[in-house]
Image (cartoon, rainbow, N blue to C red; front, side, top):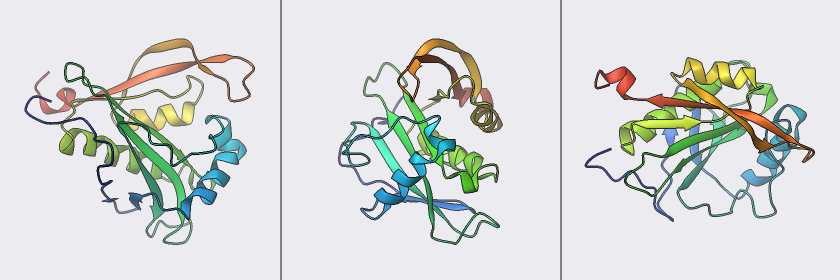
Amino acid sequence: MAGSDATATRGAATPTLVTSLVRLRPLERDDEATLRAILATPAVSRWWHPPGDDWPWDDETGTVRWAVELLAAANAGPAGAVVGLVQAYEGDDPDYDECGIDLFLAPSVHRRGLGRDIVTTVRDWLVDIRGHHLVTIDPSASNTAAIACYTACGFRPVGVLHGRERDTDRRGWHDTLLMQYCSWWYDGTE
């Protein structure tokens, strides 16, 4: 991270990132209802807490949010359809490389390679463009599909954080698995 500004700035323009499967673009007002409907599906609400009244417009310092829009993914839906949200966050302490990714996708596009494509794209944006060398992600320890996806993207388990996250039904707590991607593992500087 030396020599680069890896801190997201409030109000900075959100870039559009394009892959062969999706376009990650800045949120638009019309996206809110679709994203809330996706969050309300049992396959997603199992892992994501209900959003607040001001979501997704709550201005979290250091966080960039993208709508996930299909390009021409076979059997995943029509081109242009919004099928999820991905966000990247960055810490502001120059002595600690802190950044991470969160993602949810509509159940209709699960297990079609979009998650890997999106996580890899945002991970590479954080490393190659924003200047980070370490990216974290922390799925529920029982979310085996997410863990498999992140592992396929080069993330490695660091350890279990016991009782870290409140259950979405608010009745208890569950473990999360802290995972990290370190660019040094892959560029030979470790």
